[in-house]
Image (cartoon, rainbow, N blue to C red; front, side, top):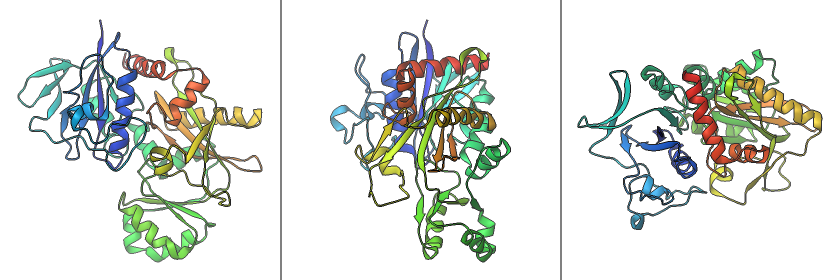
Length: 385
């Protein structure tokens, strides 16, 4: 007997297109001998739309068929990169609604017709209203098992300010930063700017609750600061300003273990951004992650001393536990020339396309993409039992 998997993608955040491509990758790798996918997209208006209505049996999923386009109508069908042409999940006159009936979780359309009973959910949403605990809270309320971190870990992992506080409490090394909330920016701007001026340049100005490197500006002169903050505020009214750290960018994947054993860490990977060789502070931005196959590459296992490799893996698990994460996470560090390891952030729902760093690191550690998906679905069901 197969189990019905709600593959939830899209969403109302700026990372909507990333989520679509991730869903295509997961759907193509899902073991259909054990799971039946029920793809549902969330469009820009927040409607839940039954997806894949043009998907033909035994054919690969594409962006076009996933968002209900006829293949010949598709304007962009790649599953390996994102461009501005990638369409959104469309509006529909019959959005589906999710609710629990007679203790059985069923997906129901606007007319009241039962589409399917949901056994487990795989939320592939990135950013606000998806990765921040909101959808996780919905599934908790409905008692539906789901892949990934719970409500608290998702919220903390999404908020760079509270994330850093959790890391500090766990004894991890965190770089200097200043948090700007909406009230302080409006009422105490000069005080905030003076606090930031005490940090060393360059600075990185980021939306506090964003991802995929959207809304981030690198500041090399204080005269650029206010413009960068205003830009970040178009994504989130809460902003963090981080002191730039000169070091190699090291990532590590964390995966929960079946049976309640200690989480495991992948081999560390290093992001090599192929930019100006004279640039000290390279920036792994949205283009490097999703739009350019040549602007960045992954070196895994990263060329590190054995002691540093072990430290990265141990601290990744510690960071995972510090925010009470579950299922999967990617932890990012800086490794300086003097051998110091500084944690940057945790991503509780990392990029999960077949070419994303998290699946690639696990592939090189010994777990292939389809096996990774199967393990995560098993973990979700184990966690709920």
